[in-house]
Length: 112
Image (cartoon, rainbow, N blue to C red):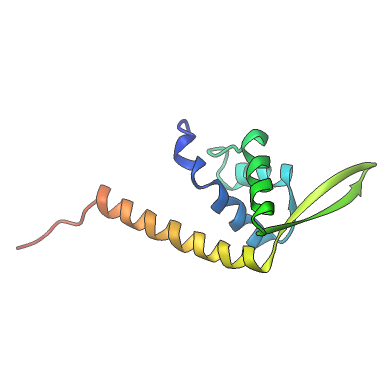
């Protein structure tokens, strides 16, 4: 997708949805999952992802578990109970927005 501004506002929702579906994930895994699901159309950079993850953690929506993998520390992110509720709210909000945009862009013809 050439215009990354269109999906930047949805980054939080994307992260919450992936973690809601997949349990715990680490940062690079999130970027690769998005790339795979969207067949390369959306590519989340580390510069966008990690500030979003840190904000979600600070807001109490994520908890972090650090594990040693191949002599390196890896941070796994998972939703808190509050995060699970927020994921549901954000998905419903995005679904309503997408429906509204479709109605606006592709209005149904009115018959008299």
